Figure: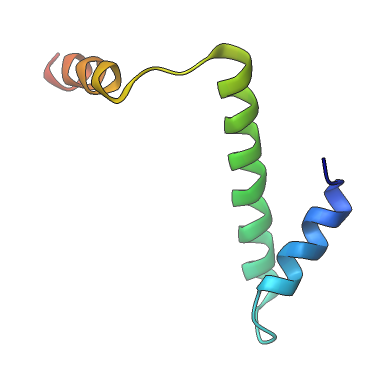
Length: 62
């Protein structure tokens, strides 16, 4: 498991040299949200594509 600092360093190496502070903030935000989503999936489980479509269908037609 890499540390937060290692993740940021890895991200910075992948971004172009001319990126802005806003670009960096956006990528850090996305990285954090993906990490949170993966943690939630491990903690609470996931549903199949079929089940997700079934639930969405109910929500969109009500």
